[in-house]
Length: 225
Image 1 (cartoon, one colour):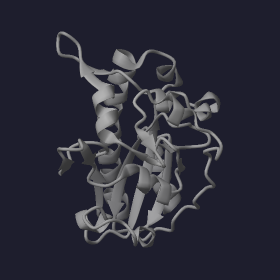
Image 2: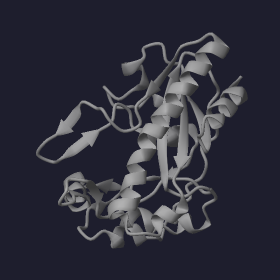
Image 3: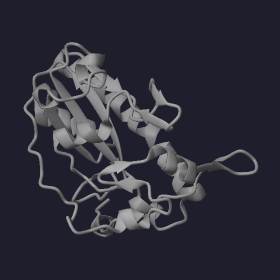
């Protein structure tokens, strides 16, 4: 069953798909546990959509920013279509989770937001990859230019193995590349990052003015798309 579900999610456009049984979430913060959304959840399906490597080779302001944002509704559509098909084929419940917005938690003073569930931590628990020093999920084959999605289900599925970290212990490229020194000990000062990163053109188009901690990572050089 699990492999059929994996194939189904990949067939809808995901590049990676892994699984985490609910027992891997015993230390999830209150309010951000899968069962806080779906009380009958027994497993979480985690998947990733890879961005073209070329988006890491251009100035991020408009081209990267546009397609990075576009990948979010694409990822949500994969979750939606996959959840429908999983319910049809396996007579179960499947709950697609928005990959980015909307969410409730917002610390105004620190400009800190938290998604309904942490997609990167779900990905780590499911075996998609490991956490970089820039706090982004990175996969040994696909790099860190990934948008992550998730589906909750009441199917009791076995977890996939958790891989070894692919972040080189001695590497500090992402930390040193940050122009506002927002990366500290595996955490991000979201306020510093947001103020430096997001803006608008004179006409009001959204811009992404910095993605250095993402694109400087050497893992992207060997990424396969």
